[in-house]
Each structure stands twice: as structure tokens, then as C-alpha cells.
Length: 455
Image (cartoon, rainbow, N blue to C red; front, side):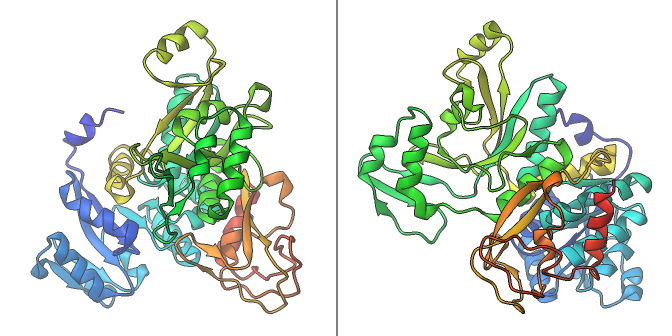
């Protein structure tokens, strides 16, 4: 897309942004970028840690005299139109005259309530909290459409970037076989020393000269050998499956399998892997979402948790020409892999906000609960166990996530509504958590989920 019309916008519109969950991680990268973006002003940020907000804003370059901490609605209303406001109560954000709400808390109760409040006032909502969209996305898209507002996922996170790539392929009439992303941390191997690193910031380097035997891709047997060698570094990551859940719900693509495939693969191999088994790949069916671990040498660029699609090559002559340009093709010439090797977090997010605020682009009223993220007990869990979402990967101790097609869900409880829930009965290892095991009936987010199932 050419963004010149946005850059040179002469409508006089300014996107006035409010951010909930503002100072760390994703929120910080967005705060740091907003001052550099035309047609966009930061109006208000919300965090439980207002002192931290003040420090971050000053670090980014805002003057302390331009920042106002507000305790209530009256103080928000009295504040200067040019001030940047700080609040600890997210409900005050909607009182500040914003046109755009960016929600970054990851808390389904807060983010769903904030999104509903904003959309019903005609304020556009840009959802970073993938946990909330996984259970409430269909309804929030509908409510946006009913209120003349935009509800959108954001560039900078993998789901929106992948959706952009997928929609580009749809526009061009390409048949998408699979759509997915690389998991967050690379598998990096040094051919000269044999040292292997898993870039999670925790795992130590391990000497694995035997990886040389499986470095060149020969077929799916290479994937099996890499898996055996690197098994202890692999896991099923809730955040990965959640992100593919979001893409599934908008595109209609279904999970490749409940736990996704997670092959350990190089970028150059993807067109040979994410294709049907009858053509030498790993897929039992096409039209799926999936995830891989990126394997690379120390001198090779990272995939950076980026996004890819594999597509069918209908015209052999055309694709042979493109192969000559260096594009990633399958050995049989029937498939190609197209990819974005990046997601730049909040640095990219202003694009999504301006597309929504200035051009009305974002809402997907056709979004449905195509797949549901669930949790399976990794061990016997006794009655009374309290389930808690925590950690960098937003996982739940004792559960392994799985991504199921809607038709397979039955009364399974959505993964990210389990936070804080106590088990009403024992759960055996290998059993999914269902609505018989927990009482979610009083959660407003569950009511939105149930409403979405009816769409």
C-alpha cells in the first residue's frame, strides 16, 4: 500500500490517541514512536503505575509541564487540550476526547470492557491484547460496525501483519495453502564451532556438531531428525497459538492440527514444508494456519518472528521467471513461500491507527469464532486448583494450549478466560478444561464469547 495520501492528508483530522497498558513492552515502543508521526497526537495514557508513566514520557521527550496526572473525570475534563494526561483508571481514558484507543493490557476483563465502552461512543479501538480478541473478537467487530467505529488488530504484531499479507494474496487471486509465523526465538547454529543457541535469553549455548548431518534439507525425515536432536528446546507456546487463533477467525483458515506443527526449519525450506503431504510436505490439508521454529546460521538474518504464506503456483512459466529472481520455491515447482521477516511492535502500530482514524479501514464484521484456544491438563490437577495466566508467553501453569476448530469445541472453556478460575472438580492428565470444570458464567468476557458463538 502507498501511504502518501495518509502522509499528505489535508482533511485536518488528527488522530488523538489513548493507550491503556502504556509503559512497558509493546506500549513503550508505541509511545516512543508517536511523537514522530504526522497527524497523530498522544492525548492520554493509563497505567496502575502513574510515576512510571511520568518517567517514560519524560524519557521520550515530553516536558513535565505538558503532562497532567488526573485522578477523576472532572480533572480530565478541566485539563488543557494540548496536555498529555496520565490516569490509573482505564475508564477515564474514554472521557478525554480521544479518537483512538489502543489497548495493551493483555487483561481480558479490562480490555473487553474498555473496548465496548469506546466502540459504543464511536471511538475507534486498536486491539493489541490478543488474549481478548481470541474470545471477543467476533462480537467487538460487530459492535464496531453497528456504531460506525473501527475495531482493528494492529500492525507490529504478527496477526495483523499476516492478515495484510494474506489479504494481498487474496486480492491477487493466489491460492493460499498455509499462513503462519515463526515462533519468537531463533535456533542458531555455528557451523565452524558446532555451537547451538536458542535465543530466549535463558538457555545456555550447547555444542551440537551432529546438527551438521541434518543441516541440509532432504525431506520431512530431516525435520524428524532435527526434532529428536533439539526436542528439549521445543514447546507449544500459548502466545503462538493465540495469534493464529486471531488469524483463523478473520480469514476462515483452520488450525493445521490442535497443537500446530512447529517444524524446525530454515526460511529457504518453507515452500517444501508447508505444503500437502502428497507433494512431500507436512500438511494433511490445505487452507491452514501454522507455526515454525526458525533455524539459521550465525551469519544469516533472523526471520524476526515474522509471517509467511505458501501459495500454489498455477502458471509454471510465470513462477519459473520468479524463481530466477531468487524467490523461495518448492523443489517440485508447484508452491512458493512469500514472507515478511519482521514485526516491529509499536513502531508500526501508528499505520493501523491512521488507516482506521483517517480512512475508516480496519473492522472485519465477517469475523467469526472459526477456532477456539483451549487448555489441556499436563498433569493431574486437583479440585480447587486456581489457574493463572502469567509469564512472557502468557501461559497457564499445568496446561498445554491447543487450537481447535469450532466444530470440535463442544463445551470446552476458552484458554484466556481461565485466568483466576478455580477447578470445580479434578482434571486428569490429558483432559481439556471444560465448562464443567470451571464456572465462567459471571464473566462479562465469557458472555461476549458466548454471544460471538451465535454469529
